[in-house]
Length: 458
Image 1 (tube, rainbow, N blue to C red):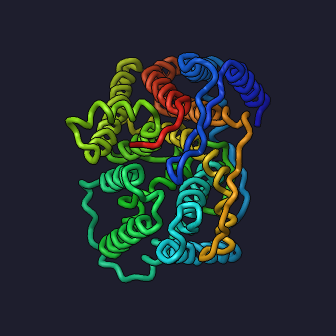
Image 2: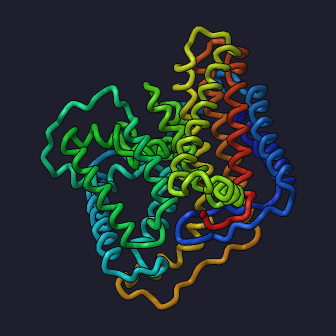
Image 3: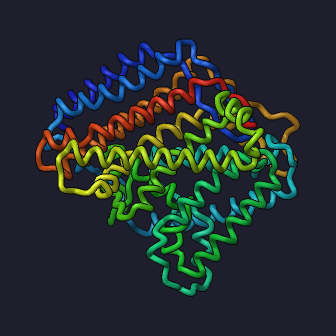
């Protein structure tokens, strides 16, 4: 990396560090298996939000004034080969596929016949702590191994297929709808606390997934209609390790997001949905949501309030992003359509989603990891008592730090995208104004959520 790149990195570090010095502690929560012990911040909430918004705005100004097209291109193109494709890599991939199928079978079996207490059931702990929290974090921090680990893809490859034509008009709307539905089931049902219910959801998902793969073919189904595969694929573009034609290579984190080609409105909607569902998962555990439920339930049944809020929030996030795209078209004074700008800038939102997922689940994962390890040694006869890790007080700041880092990475990705779209420096900078404003709003929303005390969702 050039000397100028190093100076830029140090400048960003000093600027962000100075802002963090004035911020208060906050701990993210995990929605499953009870509370992760989130506490209220020790400074006024308005100061937390102002600090986060200022950090995002300052990073945009810093990137605009101290970078040029050549620097952005040098950082984007930096790569270092790590592992070439060969027999050894294929053997490892084969073993990982077998491991995925075994873990799925064990999860279903233990969920049915094992202890039904949440902290004593390996299947429940594995799904929420080991997979959705731990494995997902490795996807955007290291690289996407899900194509090899995915047990449904492994089984589907052994089944016959009808290879029916997938309706192009559907786009990836089925994956978007399924992602929203899965999150609704998570927050509004006992799937996170009752192993037998979790098994029922896994079996239902398995039947739908394998049926779709048989009808449309595994490649088409997992690329377009399966929400889980799309989540991990998109998160994988944030990571350092990337697959290329020759094997594995290291890149600067987030740079692969510019390679993510979104061609339809439905693909943009899926990115926004991924950002929104993690936010929603945190929002329903705040006192504000409890207040909304108390006010609304006399007229709206609770069973309907969750999906209404989920869909309404998604619509609000999507409308805000497309509003920014239309405003960007005016500020940049370009002939490009708002839909085109939305497709080009949407991948930068994935860095925000990854940062908030890390803030949301890191403390939860570390707290429950000893329980998962203890139960894994004897899934059918776990210890009578399991240990939960008590995190130190300073860990409360980690949630805020990861959220801000995700937003700073998103701004850098959007900055490079603008340079790739527009030939002029000023035009590229002006095109980002509306998107930066939306990102500041997303930042303050995320920080507000983790600054709240955690309460059980109604």
